[in-house]
Amino acid sequence: MINLELNLVRSFVAIAEVKSFTRAGERLGRSQSAISLQIRRLEDQIGVRLLSRDPRHVVLTADGEAFLPQARRLLRLNDEILSGLSGGDVAGEVRLGAPEDFATVHLPDILGEFIRANPKATLAVTCDLTLNLLEQLRDGALDLALVKREPLGPDVGTRVWREPLVWVGADESLAEADGPLPLVVAPSPCVYRKRAIMALEKAGRPWRCAYTSPSLAGQQAALRAGLGITVLPREMAPIDLVRLGPKHGLPELADTEIALMRAPTAVPEAANRLADFILLSLDREHSLMEDQRVQLR
Image (cartoon, rainbow, N blue to C red; front, side, top):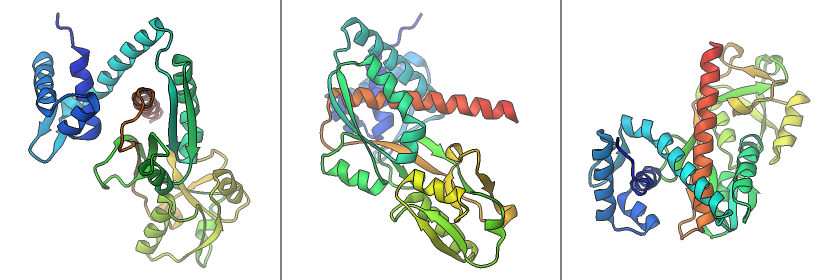
């Protein structure tokens, strides 16, 4: 019987998130050589190679990708047990930023569960556009931020959610009518606005901004009123709106993704605990959604 050492597992998860042995060591208070030794010991225990590394890059192997959600589950269970025995010793305020749509759909239950497990911690949640969240993160106004980014963008943060995008509107006639396509969008900068406009221009389809609102509720009200169409993540498209696509003369849309980022300076232990909690919870939610999608096929 082999017993995994959780300090080795924690080092592996840290490397998977920051893509660097040195930065993982800084997070955990260990040297780069100590982190390297721990990973070798973990790989020896498990009997598979978890990381592919060279002087400039650290990449998860296929076995590492499979082990990562299980590793997070082990750490979360360990932390929940210790927290319960100590009466929830993780304390302090965590300042979290997130896009409004993602925060509305995916985060409430996760954050509620975190607070119930850590009653001495408090949350201050800010909903805003990605570029504004990144600015607040750099300025020290946030400890953690969930941000939207291009899948092929800079290798920063930890990818937590892949977002297939869809066109939606009140009815098909909006997409099929002559003239510039009316768009309902958030103000610039917005990943979905950028993705919609780039796809239309690449396809040679004229467009115009018919309604601009920073509020998700305002955008959805405009959509239901038939003022235009927009781009939304597939999982967040309201069921009373029509999904549109190539058969309506609209171009295909590539995926975007959500990444979790930490402040460049040291963050409170409660923030690190919340980050791990969010990553594991979203891993689990994504797996359940994929299982349901397979069953419906």
